Image (cartoon, rainbow, N blue to C red; front, side, top):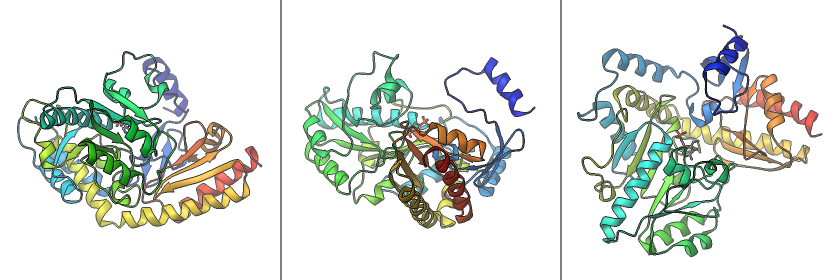
Amino acid sequence: MNSQQWIDKADKYIMKTYGRYPIVPVRGEGCVLWDADGKRYLDFLAGVAVNNLGHCHPKVVAALQRQAAQLIHCSNYYHIPSQIELAEILCSNSFADQAFFCNSGAEANEAAIKLARKYSREKHGDPDRFCIITALASFHGRTMATVSATGQEKVQKFFDPLLHGFRHVPFNDADALRAAVNTDTCAVMLEPIQGEGGVVVPSADYFREVREICDQHGLLLIFDEVQVGMGRTGRLFAYEHFGITPDIMTLAKALAGGAPIGTMLARDEIAASFGPGTHGSTFGGNPLVTAAAIAAVHAILEEGLLNRAEEMGEYLLGELETLQHRFPVIIEVRGIGLMIGMELSIPAGDIVKKGHERGVLLNVAQDRVLRFVPPLTVSKAEVDEMISILTGILEEVAA
Ligand code: PLP
């Protein structure tokens, strides 16, 4: 079937929860996707920061094929060797001691919300300690608890009553956070860099102050690294840039090289609050996805992709800054590693559509920010090709 035939069929059978573009990708390799008509696209969205290893990384493909032939799924009533091995790898490369596995970023954040409430009530002997402070313009997922945690009205409208026990403060404003802490507060949950909020990078000392506030009031600090974790910023985890450690961290997206997975990591003392029967997931950390994740994490660490994300991030940022000097519609270029945003004075939707016509996949966050999250394996030639296409588009829409 060609792309149009698939789109017609989707119109009949698929709920319209996404404003989908008329593109039907059917094959991928590295930074390149091909659609059902054979058209080639350079992928600077990477499944929204999922395909950090590029499409169909051979080590992930081999791990999936091997594991699928051996054991696809078994219950969490039993021990799962690849889940245990993955937990060891993640813990030995982070601040954390233990992992809980689930299937998505929202579920990882749900787990963090539940653990923070249970731990804090037990630790402080206070049933009224349940409130979690999060940031305005944050994004934490689409389940009811994570919609309630998210600081964006457009995600919440239609779904009230929201879950009780979340307070929102401006991001990158430690004074606002300090003022919002109350006797009901148990935790602070933040993205190290706001992704859906428009690639917002906080000031260098924001998180040091946040950590101090949490320590002073006995609050847990939860980092939602669903979008920025797994090497995207040039470090395995984004918290490594800020000279502090969180108490709980959530990961998903890139963790299994494209297979659906989520995880919540915590230190021993906090993890101990999740005893048998407190939380669970049928598929969470099953043999197939955790085998893929082991291969993906090894590939990130062994193929020099952290350095590469840093180097190519600097190169891409530099090229975008050059465009900024030429086109006054570009207000700011910002980011760390390959988590980069370009804020415009005009809506970015038209640029994305023209990009599609010319064979490059870009993305808009918050209407006026172009977000660049290519695979960490992206080459200089691929960056140059994207920049040349983007330059042509800017000459048309913004000269
Ligand atoms: N947290 C952050 C920071 C995200 O960017 C996202 C998704 O974009 C989520 C959570 C939700 O993840 P998922 O869509 O896997 O539930």
